[in-house]
Image (tube, rainbow, N blue to C red; front, side, top):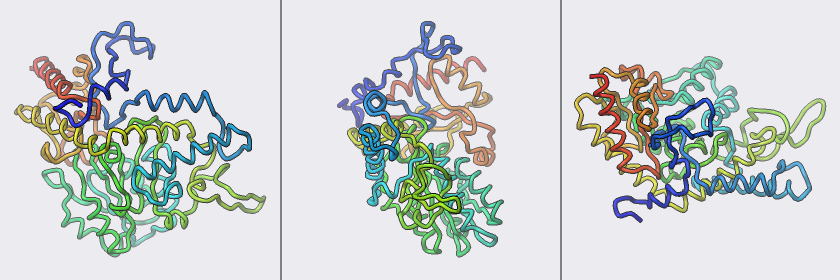
Length: 424
């Protein structure tokens, strides 16, 4: 292990062939890189992380060895696929501390679909006039838009916990908003814009004191730090595979078993039914009653392999590495008077830094960085109301993962210098 990092970065990078890519050629023919000439510096991990060979191999093994539909065939391949898919639920449940196993973990497409599942399957039935849903001003659109629209359909009120000048939640304001009318508290665990790590256990206590449920958006936390949903006492918790070395098209919704059992399905069709007549239908057991149709089998296999990969590294090490890079980037960028950084200090945030360079639009800065091979995110990061509060239309975001290095942060700073000179 390299002395200066919590993880063996060189060994990890060897698992990700894409990191050896060069960029800058013709993008009209994806997969052909003959014209590419600039080394890639990938700092857009909060949007999507890369996928190691071990996960790709697990998916290939499924397609080459036991590709079949699940829970529908007595033949050997179907049984193998069914066991692998069911075991994937158990593996993901174990990873987040869900002692109920597969019955408490529903596979979805992503965090957004998990949010919609609860909003429609629970919210439409349980919310009404006089009820409130409490969120925060730093919510991702996946939470904010979903509960906003459900509130319009049900007549419920939406309230937002203030974000203070340091990018943290105003917990006194939270105490004022979470009251006897509150039926759901929906809060992001780690902000994808500010990097703020929210006190979700404290918010769970507040919610439960008034008889409310709490839904935690863990899209930026599960990939980057140890998470135990039972220690948090979350009623619902959601995250996505593609941000944690897994394939796209799969995420997970954790829900306490007794709550999930009371909820009605969100989608109907095959796989989620037990019996059907022309007059009525009954539903399968958990979690299958929420997984209508042919499920994401290959993605589920890959999801479990990603969890294995991260466990082998150790989530404490993943967190330490991310925090090291975030603090280093924060300190480097803080040296410039013409850069504004959003969120808490560098030693008190998740593994990302959102910022703006004076007089340069975030999209222009991103374009110039791209010419230097530096891949970052520019825009409102699906937090438009938060950017409105910050008084900016967009920001530039660098986000880090287990394969990134200090040298790549230095390349980010050098690329910003090039942009500064160009716009001088």
